[in-house]
Length: 457
Image 1 (cartoon, rainbow, N blue to C red):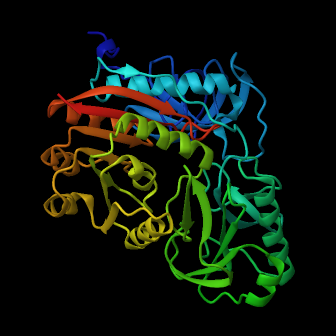
Image 2: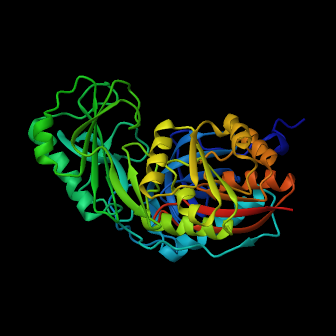
Image 3: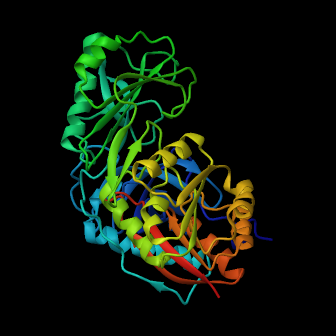
């Protein structure tokens, strides 16, 4: 009997963690990573690559069905690859021409709806391109670190939770925002302050968050520091002349800028921004679309799909500070907003009063448990607008919306891979997906927004 193993029993070779492999990139996955396959057909995802690239990449995560790897060397550029413009990791798709970015985003929305939602028979409309391809963000969060023994302010190095790479000019931020960030860094160096060491869990400076009113010119700076950090507030206020200067002190070891105790150092607690003809006041942690110009186009699509005639009862779920509901209020009979963050609801009410919108009411509550109460209070909605987080709608929320029985649902999505199954659930319940229009809010990145409208069949 032969001692050679049966061919059927031999598993395809898979690279191990730490292995460097040579690959040809075939396509791009949702999230932007390049997709390659070994000779045996094993899938490897590689960041910072585009279709057609031949690369060497090091595996850092290995699963049964796939591996993830980091680019080590570009051996041969794919036909679409162009030279990057920004020297930081916040623009991973800048190696693709903008028109190609749009094509891929449109394609990814189509694939998600078909593959994850099993959907067909709807109209997929052309993607709405961005107004500005660079310097479009109205809010950015930067981290402090140490580079070559010197305090720097920038972004995390790709694949590293502790190493910060400093930068001089962030091309996603306005020139004024860049100057403010440089001023904060110069002040911090002059004060002799050190960066928070994420491994040792010590050090003063963690983050700086810079938010701008693109239409008003107002600027807010929030410096995030560790508990016990000695900060000269007077010198900070003298060095950083902005409309709102805040200091957040955090005792936990988490990497986010949320939480902690925030105090006003100088100026006002909020800044103003204008959107769709309305004026909004933004508190430090309020959610507001980070691309003002494209937010107007996104909400314009949502209003078009809602097709309000002036008499409808509109529910704005996950309403945040009320932006969508308030921009539609003039065309609705009444607007009811629901949002779990109480501070956001306070902002929404303030924004309604400031803009003299009298037919909008806002309530704090979890959509999962609060939607039934809202229906009991307001009556059943004619139109529901949902703008959920990236995780999409839970099955329970979908059931609550179906119970509320609106004749129309407008779904504003920041993630087509969660829009698709949610839309599929609604179609199964008797709704018909009519139109979907992608909107490019974030050029040079793989992120894509889309607006969908479903009518009761």
